Image 1 (cartoon, rainbow, N blue to C red):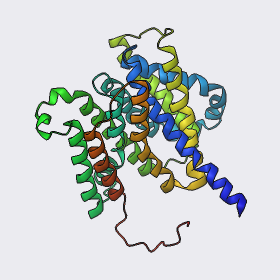
Image 2: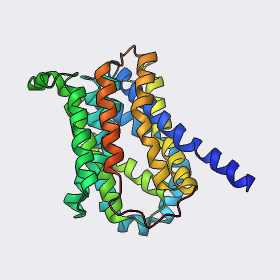
Image 3: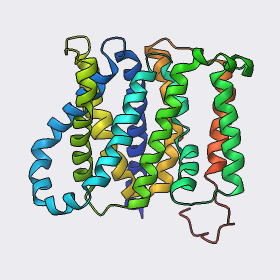
Length: 304
């Protein structure tokens, strides 16, 4: 009994560390875009991850090539949404907004997922999802308007935030496609093949924008992005899902705006203001409400 309690306590650190790594990456993204172009950051990030994984995964992928070939089209679509559109737009958005705002908009993924699920999976949202989504959306608008909704009329001043919203919308598609297809393929093999596709997708962008050189100033950011949020955090997240379940693991995602704001304040000297607090609370309340199930709990035997 004591052993189980000890294991569970340790397992709760896994998603906490994963979210901390991803939060740090948002701040790293904001820092790095002043040193290197978005297309180059994105390409180098996945190139580094691909190089690190290759010694461990190349022969496994070859051994499972029949299985991979069967899901090649689906993996290509997942890579386009999750690794190119989402990440590429996030890096571009970082040019025009703060890491704090990026972290807050990122927390919106569960709400967008509800509506993308309605579109693709025909999942009809319950009343909690609808009301929660409206509250979250109003909170997001409150932050984007810096506490004054009338400033939203000047859309040009919010281009970075709007790009981040579009990026998060694409990531919602990634999550819904994963749920729809439920690919019977090992997760690391899936990740490796998706990264391979991401590198191929970057070629036209690099031909158009060019590839910036790696130097002493941008190398640490690129190494961090290529290893920690791309490989280590997903691995910790997968282990957390195995140990404490997907529902309890997903709750930790709500900490990302908080962690991002703290890191951005300490490292990038960004300010957390009253409108961030009010809007952030509205978003979190809305997200919690949106994820509430309609049926009054027949499954009462949750771990207590």
